[in-house]
Length: 448
Ligand SMILES: Cc1cc2nc3c(=O)[nH]c(=O)nc-3n(C[C@H](O)[C@H](O)[C@H](O)COP(=O)(O)OP(=O)(O)OC[C@H]3O[C@@H](n4cnc5c(N)ncnc54)[C@H](O)[C@@H]3O)c2cc1C
Image (cartoon, rainbow, N blue to C red; front, side, top):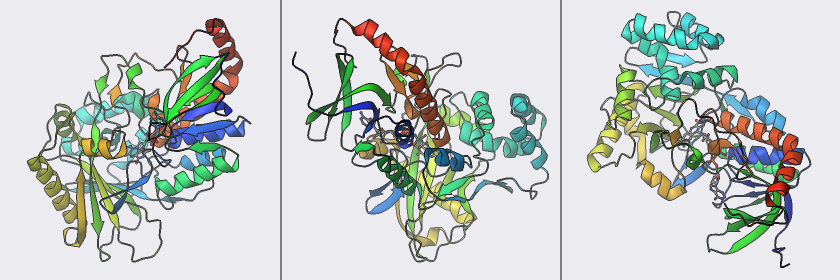
């Protein structure tokens, strides 16, 4: 029989060299498996790397982690320094900072209670919303509403609980030294030092079966194909086509990028600053109804410089959640830029005068330039629906964005999904091969 023995054979092929793909690949190597990572773009990192837009170099997505990142990277044998930085929430008449300190005595007891008793979360948040003064409720709900919001305009309690139960530690933020792309470099080094192989500019195109081996097809940007062989495919490719039709849409992120002159100083100990409108519920309702509310919430952060020289110009990104499929016209852009600059100027003195360059990236431009969306999980399945990491029909293990079983859209969740998938692979290898033999012993051709 004619075989496609062109490429090498690996125990596992991981699709996508984002955080979840790299984490899965390292774990598989740690278990002694031979691993190939296929990455369709020209560099690893996915939504956690830097790119240049119009000579401005910026983080494209993820920029801040929770304190559990130390333990997760230790487990992977990845050596990297993480810097503790604060998350600041700015309200019209109040500032709240995480990690919590005793500086906010009036809100602290309830917030501390929320973090230490996840089982009370639904009840406590509802009581806070309905029984407190609206302004106070806004302050208490904002940290949950802003980062854990869902299309139903209500906080997703399951998601909030996951954050607390899994102890991701986002309430005590960490920034990788040198930024996310530096962390990606450390992960790539760890994987390669274990003998792992990463192929960039190699887009996964599907597989077919031959003698119980998966013939994995990939293409480079010139359309040239190659085939590698494996028993096991792990994929971090967006997987919402596996979600039911009634899954709700999630929100994409628009980004505003600023290069500042050397005189401008961002608060040293702070990473993210969230600007919260007076009525966070009204803003959430508006954005989900497709309205770009005048009082939209947004957050900004400082891009971590690779260089430690003090005169490196500081780069600031500001993100806002955009209404679904919202096409930004010129007046929207002007509205977004004007609000962001005026609000940041009030809070960060001298901001406006220090801008050297600015650039607005609506979600469609993000998709065009990077090849993936500025939203991690575009579809939120109904509550009763749960997506397994192992798809038995396709015989593929899904991780990161592709599964997000609990619909989490952050790094720690992506890393955890990689850990769960690899545990499953190691424990299931025998079962899966048996199943494949049964289903495909007739040599039937299947392609995904
Ligand atoms: C704007 C934005 C801001 C964010 N901010 C934060 C934050 O501050 N903190 C946080 O924890 N999380 C944040 N996130 C979420 C975080 O970035 C993601 O959870 C995480 O990066 C997901 O990693 P991943 O490996 O699953 O997917 P990705 O990073 O998307 O990686 C998938 C990889 O697969 C590759 N790929 C796709 N198709 C193919 C194919 N056919 N063949 C080969 N390769 C393919 C892609 O090129 C990509 O490199 C943010 C996300 C966005 C969009």
